[in-house]
Amino acid sequence: MLTNYIKIAWKVLLRHPFYTFITLFGISLTLTVLMVLTSFLDHLFGTHYPETRRDRSLYIQFLTQTDSSRTFQNKGPMSFKFLTDYAKSLKTAERVTILTFLNSSNAYVGSQKIKLSTKYTDADFWRVMEFEFLEGKPYNEQNIANSDHVAVITDDLERQYFGSETEPVVGKDIEIENIHYRVIGVVRGSPVTRIYSYADVYFPYTAPKSNYQNGGMRGGYVAVVLAKDRSDFPQIQEEFQSKIDRIPLPTVENGFKFSVLEVKSEPYLEGFVGTILDGNKGLKTIFFGIIAFIMLMLMGLPAINLVNVNVSRIMERASEIGIRKAFGAPVKTLLWQFIVENIFITFIGGAIALLFTLIIIHFINTSGWIAYADLTINLTVFAVSILVCLVFGLLSGVVPAFRMSKLNIAEALKS
Image (cartoon, rainbow, N blue to C red; front, side):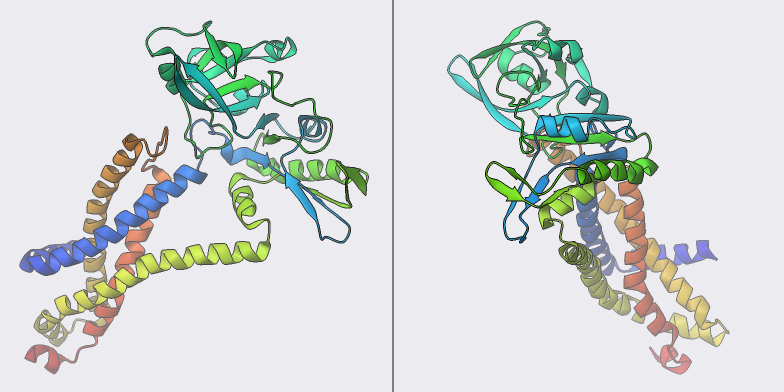
């Protein structure tokens, strides 16, 4: 029966090329937008190189100090000492790395200035992140203890500074901000959208200008806590919060007296949204509601337009419906026939959309708009695309199918 429905749908598509073009164009355009959007969101929030352990990582981004009246607030990254005392010492975590967000520096090749994004990290950074080393190796605890002037650079900086990607550069000198460093390793770079791993140059935290010796709570460092398993998150968060709760309050730092101290350890997506919305739960609900509404509109409006096209297409088959009903075809059978046909047509549009999406993604990855962009159609994106096809097929097919299945036999035969 299902095979017959699909054969009929294929014959109908061939019968009216104009309706077929309009239908497939509307479906494929909508699904292409949704697939590209899904791929980009997966690129932003999914687990990808070199943050391949993001799914079992907690992020400690900001420390918030608030006065007793809750009128004034200081918020920002923490000092290396604070994170060493309260994050690095977590016993329930597998590993903790302390690092900076991006810093800006300059290097010169002759008279040409190269603008660099730099990052200071500890040795555990290379164990939490999974970089691909094209040359050399990462710096270790011994390099840090010796305050060695060493650096790990990306393949892109290797090309810009040394002019070649074929000759080894490990052991060579690179001058950044009038300080000489020995290149100890070269990694394949990460996209700029992955702020915890992205940089052009990576330094040990004992390198000059890292400010790791600042003694207060505030500074320029954040931490990534790697759990043995995602199920350990509550236990890690509880241990971390218990350490924060033991900090004596109120206290004064840099002339600011505060009575409330808040430091969160959160999964990546929750921390990202919290940063945008400043941790307001009500705003988070509104934010996700708006996203859901936009997604519904992206599918709903084209589906409504396709309903009208499908009604016109199905109206031409009124006599066929009348004959089938005259021979005893139940409403349920007719209803399922049109739904299956519409889902089949939607999947054809989905196949076209998949081809367009692959072309667009390839263009984005190779355009240089996002350095090291690696948008993909992975299993998650593909599964979402299949689900969208089913929903879209149902949205645009149920109404006309139900309407036509209710046609009076006499009226249908007159059509």
